[in-house]
Image (cartoon, rainbow, N blue to C red):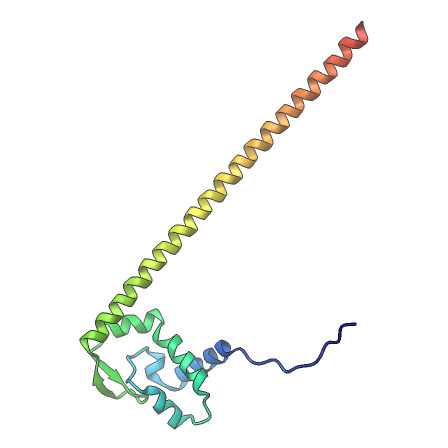
Length: 159
């Protein structure tokens, strides 16, 4: 006998982080416009939104700062911004260089992913064509076999 227990489901942290990120984008221009964030912006967020779960915030910040839009802005930026959009510090050349490397790697991965997808699609198309050709060959062979077997019965009946 199987007993099903009603256990509360734990919310998915990624979904919670996406919800938090949408809230941050709605409330703060720096998130909405993908402006380079000041280092330690998590502390500013916690100060303004003290009930924010730190783990969920970390995930949300990771999603935001790893997005292509943020990386593209960061690559060409010269200043970082606080929650109010005020410039607070410079973006160092090493941070811009690191961002460029990440973007190049992402582009390279995307090219490889598309290449693999295209190869898989072409293989599937070839396999489908081969299967159709095999089906047609089998159908023709069956027709020939049926034709010759019926001829054999006719010649045997004539004897």
